[in-house]
Image 1 (cartoon, rainbow, N blue to C red):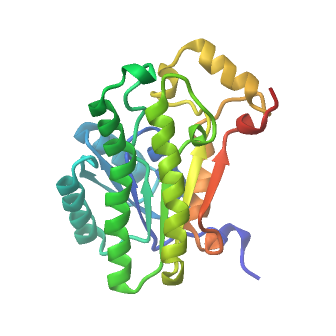
Image 2 (cartoon, one colour):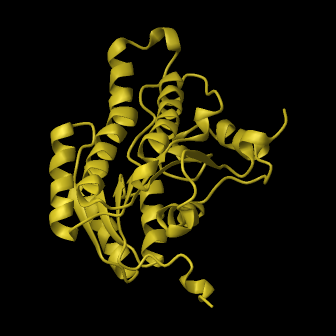
Length: 258
C-alpha cells in the first residue's frame, strides 16, 4: 500500500512560479517545496527574488530566481530559456504574476489604463503558457498549467472593472486550453482566491476587509498558507483527471447569501 505521506510527492518535479517572490506566489512555492518540488522563481525585483530563494532553500528545497518582466514578451522568453537551461525542464507552470491594475470609475479610465491591465493580467499569462506548452509538446511530455485568477471573476467590484474583466478572461482561457491541450496530457486549471492577507490586499480600506470577513461563510479571511495545498494538488498527479476548472478558494465568500 502506498504511504499516504507520498500521495502528493513532487520529488523530481520542477515548478515555474511567476511572481513567485512574494504574496500568493511565494506561498504556493513554499507548499510545492514542502512536497519536494524544485522551484523557478520569476520576478522583477532582484532583491525580493533573492530573499524568496533564500527562504525556499532554508526549507530544504532547490530554488533559483530569474529576473522577468512578464509584460514584456522578450523578457518572458529570455527568462524561460534561462529556466530550462538551469533545470533542464519544467513540469508545472504557475502563471501567478498580476495585479490590481488601474482603479477608478469606469467612465474615467482611459484606453491606456485598459491596455496596461490587459498586458499585466492576460497577455502575460498567454505568453508564459505558450512557452510552457511548446516546451512540453517538443518533449512529448505531460504538463500542468495553472493561473491565479480571483473570486473577482465571479463577483463584481466597484472601481475595479479592469481587474474583474481580466480575471474573468483568464478563467475563460483555462476552459478553452483544457479542451485544446487535453489530448496532449496537459491539464489547465485556475485558482480563484478570495480575500487573502497579502501586501496588496491589506492595502485596501478596512471597511472592505471587514465586509469580506462578514460575507465569508467561514467568517474568516484567508492566510497565505491556505494557498499551499491547492498548489501542490494541481501540480501533482492526483489532479490528472481535473482540467478546465476554476477552483474557488474564498472561505465561502462567493456563496454567502445577501
